Every structure is written in C-alpha cells, then in structure tokens.
Amino acid sequence: MTVKAYEYKTTVPMGWVDHNGHMNDGEYGRAFSDAGMVWLAQMGLDTEKIEEISYTIFTLENHIVYQKEVFGGDEITVRIRIHDYDAKRLHVFMTLHDPHGDQCAAYEVMYMGMDRQTGRPAPFPEFFARTVADYYSMQDNDVDIKEMGRTIGIRR
Image: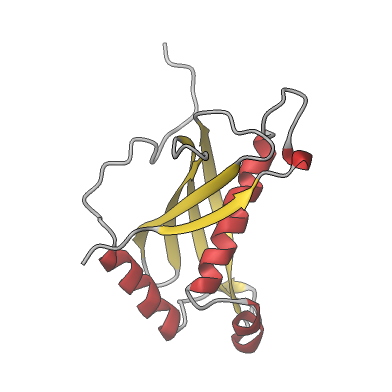
C-alpha cells in the first residue's frame, strides 16, 4: 500500500520576507527544519521521548534548490519522503509548495541518530527504526527525483 507523504503546513510570516519582497533564502532552511522536527515528533521522537531516552537526531548535511518565489502571507506545504536509511541515518527529501501546489523549493538532508549521553552517533531506538521502515515501505519508492544529489558549479 502506498501512502501520501507527510505534509507540514505553515504560513510565511512577514518577518521571513527580505528586501526583494519574497521569502528570504535562509527562511527556507527554517521552514524545512521546522517541518523535519514536527515530522520526527510524529514518527515518535517528540521532546518528551528525546528527554526520556536521551536520544535525538542531528542534521549532518543539507542542500536547498530554490525553484520559485514564495511571499509573505502564503500558506506553504512541505512534503517529506525518506529516500534511504540505515541503522542510524536517514536520507530525506522534502519539497516546499505554494498555495497553488507549485513546487517552489527542494531540500535534501542527511539526519544522524545521536546518543545524547555520549554525544556520539548511535543506532535508532527499536520503535523508531520500525516507524522509519514502515514509512519507507508505504511510500512510492519508484520515483526519479531530479533535484537529488545535485552539486553546485558553473557548467561550461
């Protein structure tokens, strides 16, 4: 069974708008980060659980592709899919959509599970590993994502 990707919705505050009249590039990172944290909480790693088990998720690396302007007051939707995972890492892909459903940005991120007592990487707790596997198995994994794995450079 295929399920729809998790969706996070928020409205762009005017404080996120820059001198060009659109959402500041740094705020895209905030929107994606906020979406990721809410998604991880939905997957079972909320603030209380993080404290209880002394385990959390860190961001190792991320990359944003800007595709279309977003403006103050726009309701945006972030959709989240797991591209790949192992015992302690999640390779996640997110897209940000405007009120018309147009894709305005793409975000690729590598998350790492961390033991808060040792400050070192650690495998996912069993409950979270099961949730990750279930989420991955219920999404459509036969997709080609053109924004994945992009590098920055001047093409000559």
